Image 1 (cartoon, helix red, strand yellow):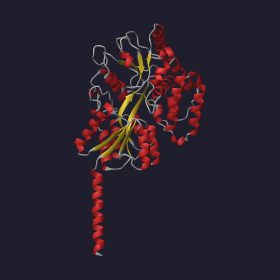
Image 2: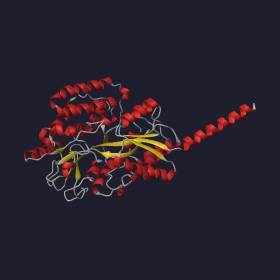
Image 3: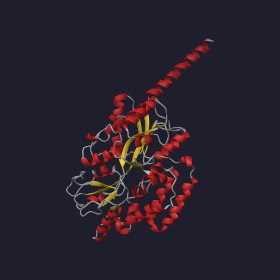
Image 4: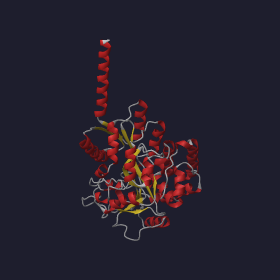
Length: 429
């Protein structure tokens, strides 16, 4: 009896020790950020460590979806994963691997983020499952103010006419790079999404993003045709072959060459940080407003946006504390306050004062105050559909005569996906 009692005491102590160790250990974090972005995000994690005493173990990889899937399958999921794709998070929510967040946090998020952003962070449910760590504005076209001095195109027809005029004068309108392993092609999907949103409108866009509109429909087909007009060989720097081989992060460099290699770039707001790392002919770096600015994508008054979303995959005290911290105004101010980092928060309490230039404030104001927002459609689609979309864009860029075949192939993929796998996130006002 004494031996049994002693054994029970030892087991009890061990259990208590194991629990304390788990509670007091480092929080493991997986995200897509590497290089300078990883350094910036680690400033947020360092602030969390200073406030809570909880250390962190961060892994950054551009193959974040693939790494997370492997970790979950092996039973070694991180405490927290940050994904640029709500559709992938929704898949893990359906399997039970993505865990719900605290109701108290849900109330705080509802108080700090606009209704559209709250809906995204609930990923199509009535429960909070994610926190938007960083947001981006996608419906923008970048240019050098010194080289675009006339009236700004305010309609799609005006934009096409402006680009045609540049081509006729011997210039090249567009910078474009499709390389982004392992997700090459997404800059092209952004183009098609913006064209569809601003021509067909939020209702059709939402229907398409949630699997309810055929890829062979007139609206979707026209968006591809319109993009095809943009990417005619004379329309993009180096032609289509160069666009296929150019990394998305390098595509905008010719905006700042003398003479310019291209005049316009359609790219999300994060590209500002890339611009500010370049060198001009005089040895200085491009500056917002003086050397680059943006015009809104022409058409309807609605903006496409995206976000990197943090979700909890292991229910530990460290994970819950980190998720709550990432949602806080304090944490959301850190990354945007880093010079030239060009990170943006969707948290309305952050305020525009954290941004150091007018261009960044315009981006942030749209993200937090615009009356009509729609989320990146390919980020909401099931992974099978998104992957097929990426591949189709690359094929179309190589050979625009294949459009009808590609749309039928995409439609076949849509029909193969069960209805429950699609996210239905409201779009517009």
